[in-house]
Length: 332
Ligand code: HPA
Ligand code: ZN
Image (cartoon, rainbow, N blue to C red; front, top):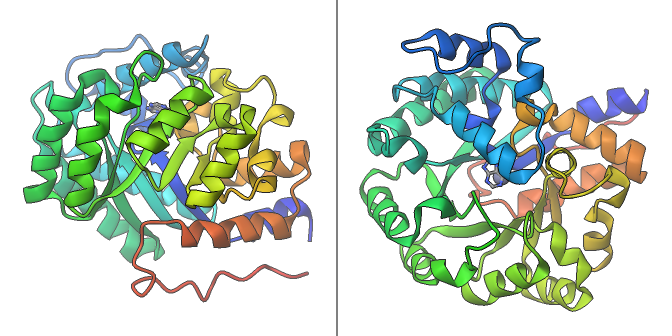
């Protein structure tokens, strides 16, 4: 079997994917035609310009333009279902999807309705593809800690299938300590904890994040690789890193995939997962991530398979509820 075929058949786990960042280009054009036309794009070809970024902050601006197309809660069912269908097409068995609720609430959409539609999409995908999915709420740093505390209250009453919180959005300039109270409250609420960190800011942000927020996983973590003491600390504390290689390439967090620190994380004993972040926006999917890691960093099928096993261990799932007996390495 060719390596491409083996990679397609490998079972996979996705721990870090944004629902809105997964909107299919075709669906994006369709959404753009519902109601008021927001974007000057009509064809898939037009979108090539839209999906090219000058850097991380430019990417965040483009991402917020996609947010504007979600003008009704009901669209969440479609985009969640399609996101999971795409994941299933790459043989992903379990997904932890990121929902940035306030991106829509500040335009008047309702938290509990959005969660309900997301769960409808998840249930349909489970029925059609057998894939499981839980939700993490990103309390996007652009909005500040008061909004985050309000979101924790929403989760208390309307938190069906929401298992964790996360801080994403702008990184440089928002010190992790700003969210210390939010993370403490979330922990008391029984939520699991993760944080986008070390994607667009230095290792000092990752240090402060692990001391002040005590997350179980770090999203991206790229800059942590510059500090061996930090890597040892992550290992000792059992904090894993949700790597997003193609995302890091496309936003300029790494210059080339050969420079990506995923191997350095692993050599230091840090557990990693492999993730797509915002797949169509970064021209990727899980098969592409695996294939690029094979081509550019020499990962073998067995290594990739083992990362999948570690990812089950570091996922926020009730292992009793999900059967992983199908997670075997395909043989020739
Ligand atoms: N980082 C921060 N916020 C985001 C990202 C990301 O990679 N993708 C979507 N929102
Ligand atoms: Zn992300």
